[in-house]
Length: 264
Image (tube, one colour):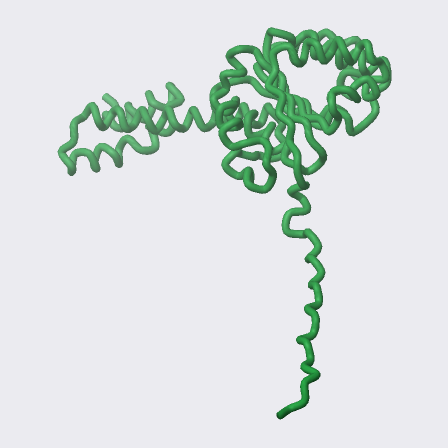
């Protein structure tokens, strides 16, 4: 009969419980010395395995989301600009907007942190086991055009509609022609009241007719996007210029007045 330790190693390997397999022998010695309960020993081993699987699963979801970099809300300098407030963002970080199939729209000039905040919510959603995809508006339009020419557009639209959260970054930076606008509208329409979107833009809503070259389509798109949405306007200076502001010129002080009185 196989020695118990070797038998356990083999069985744990078959069950793909590699973390437990690596540590059960050493932990058994440790727990025996401390006189701890065997249930505590087992719970500790299983907890290690669960944490490993959760971390691996999280890494897979973050990889599938295609974030350009990882950002968390704790790294955001809320004191630099007045909006948004930390409390507003912490509330959104509870992810109730995902449960309610609501959207988040971030509006503001370049450099004020829209992408940082959008990614931080995306990372939170990955941690909560949601399916997330980050994509720029320009790349989304390119993919829509490419799949349409290859007769694969329904597959892409179906994939996007199954996501729990689609983050579309930088809408308004590049022009969109009429055909592209129609394809973009199909994405928004498919997501409407079925799952959530986060969208960042540098353009106010009254200029979206110019982005899509069609005021009627822009109005229909906005109607669906904003029906259940948190609209956050970010104002202030670019974070990229933080610490690079030109120094204020010093103002020369007037000379001390000279007394014209004669000495006594």
